[in-house]
Image (cartoon, rainbow, N blue to C red; front, side, top):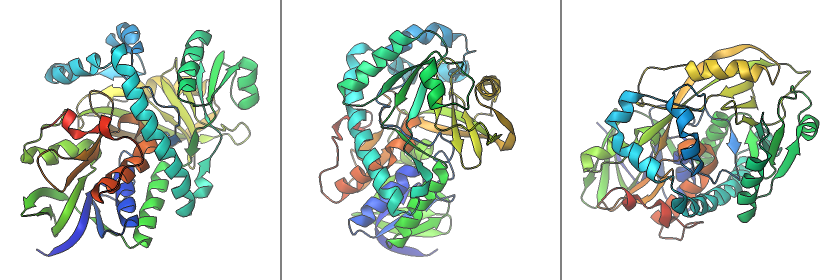
Length: 415
């Protein structure tokens, strides 16, 4: 088994890992990025491709309590949950619900705003530098209600305005003017004007990985077996060799907790599983931007290969058998809005790593020098990946991060 040395090893080649590797390389560090698959092939591939400037409200916000009765029926497209998993993970569920208290909302929204603002800025810079600027669309994204939800829309708009985030309220006619290719089923809309989207999030991550490689970074495809302290360094055991590094970054998304367990860390990580399927679009009636159908519990977004319909959240084990019930429920609803044809390829499933407070872990491990944690970005990982990586690289280099990282400190959950 061969062994080599480097300053930084980043484990995980999703958007967070690739961003961390590139940001560390920008700071002049020697960096090896390792994953079992090609960059952008796991959770970072299967999202709605939104760079959302306004996703500052965590999933467990105060409105969750009002919606809880309908979610408990386990029939709503927005949220399905496995009762056995819920019993086995009762501690996580209780903490998740506790964090939805009104008193805990503003600090988390403020933290997410700082992370998102820094990340959106980096996305717009990097996507051009990575020669993938043709993939970004500055058309905003539309949150839409089928019913008379003007009060809810105004409440959301007021929250965004507090953080300086622009949006526009739309009636049925304004929505039709914005999206003339869809059926006018929505009564109320809110356009996030400062949000961008891309036509292939997986390809964007791959472009960032190529940019990292062009800057002198090293990308390895190998199974990661273990990490272990080795004096003042770290030993990373791969299926085909070992790497000795001064710093190790765990950015393995939903696989992060298990590689930390042998080191004595018990991370309360759960998984927002999600599904998507893509369909052939009708060029005569195009979809111009992502639309979040709030009542229907799904997002549909134009992608390179067609219209991608994404399902809501499924709370269950990371590796539990797939259940396409949510996707089967929402695809007919989407067909009632946008005109599209047969499916392109198979349905996709992924797992989004989530901590009880819906904030990622970003920072140094409490008991091990040189071990850095960057995961738990829940369902806004594509949006928040670049700044998560930039902050981690800055801390490794002893520099101040581009936003306040205190709310994301690992020691709020592990010691």
